[in-house]
Length: 185
Image (tube, rainbow, N blue to C red; front, side, top):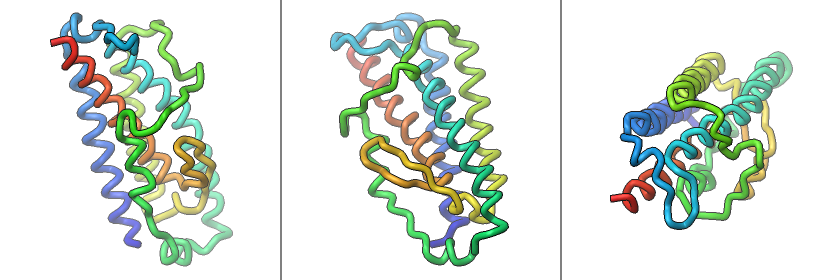
């Protein structure tokens, strides 16, 4: 596995996903506050949910990156890189809205306590945090720590895969916002 290519691909995916999310902050109030007929969240609520989910995933990514950097002293990074294979198919469903039932923890549900400008600013900061973690672990160190991800049965995933998951989750929510906008027009 070319770990440098993987890091580059994740960086590119993050850039595309966060650019797509960012354009939703410029929508008109009608689009932002449209309540879909299925009783789902408005675009503004989805944007808050993206922020909240990123917040909690970044806690795990931060812990994982610190542990990975500590593990660098005791584990053979070259061996890990040579024996790593990225199973992209295993992750693809995470980015597809409605591909599986997703039960969200209550702490990731929007509460309407943040205004749109604040949410936009926080999501931008989260994007830069992800890029900083990729820079920190630029030589493959992210492979040196795995944490369990229960969503869609992913199991043990490394720090890079957690960052990719975060990006896929944003992509999934972009589709949900697009669905709202289509229904509203």
